[in-house]
Image (cartoon, rainbow, N blue to C red; front, side, top):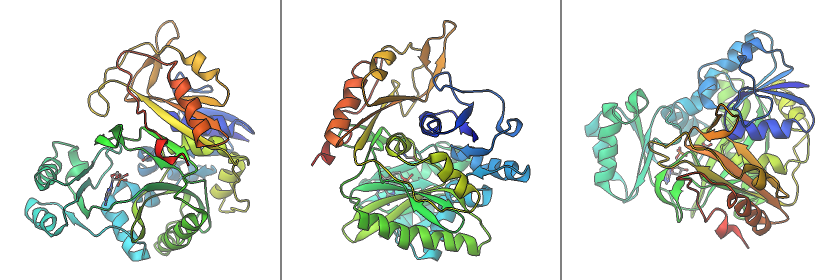
Length: 406
Ligand code: AMP
Ligand code: GLY
């Protein structure tokens, strides 16, 4: 097949790399670090299958536009993508489908929001309803900080219109796990579970980011946990969507917290996770293109298979991330990092200068994945590779997957 991947980040680099094991791949718009990047828009490219990476084009209806042209597309239409486009609507769907989730309320004015905060038990979660690149969530034990977030969001100052409606939740505790389900509208297969590190600093300190690293498999996410997620969360959600006339063909990314009272759904995303994709897909031993084509056609048949090893990815971010970032620095050491056995470097926020050198151009610049027989081996390869990479102000976490070594 000729496959067109839409997007320009580390996730799309990983998708393209793994699809290319069996197929021809172009990436639009891609970036100068992703081989096969082209500037032609997806609607003007001929391909046998289109795989849409980021949420924004899904929410904007790119999958619908391509399907209307008769193309085979992996990615939900705008109707299904609303699960990620509106957290308030997602919560309504979770409740309707009977999926366990945090107690919550939806607000567009200050007084009722403050009143709901007062009913919570010491851990407060305030989220923008709309898209905020993974950054529109405040989790805090300080009611003053929670109130400040409510004020900032509702005023439009923090996240524009995305924050003018907000969701407030009870805070949950426990390890987090991401289960990415490949859906064909009716059926779904789980990919190997992963765990993402959302906070910017070691020890889960500092503000939330789009994700600073990940590993797979996840010891706490046993086969039983994954089966429970598929049976009690993903299946009823697909059925609820279908009852609303939504034919969901794409990734349903279940972000769960394994709480003392059982797994609870924090959120659905409507796409592959970033950086989960960079650890899950390299472990795939079956044909990714075939899997996604079957899902896109509504004919999922063959369950994906994974190696028995492990993968760890460490995100190298620019100075200032997740706030204002420094850009324009030459990235050194890429060749030495990539030359290490079992290491893949996926490029995200990069561009090229006049001499063709890769330079930093965004918050999350690279995801460096190491694979090995177990988490410890994968982790040491990833960090060995990261040690070769440098630019002024590079920041990365040192504790990715450290607690998963058993
Ligand atoms: P979300 O974008 O909804 O996944 O939230 C981003 C991150 O905030 C999650 O990965 C969690 O680490 C944290 N978070 C979200 N909701 C809750 C909650 N109800 N309780 C505790 N932490 C949460
Ligand atoms: N890694 C979190 C996300 O993709 O939203």
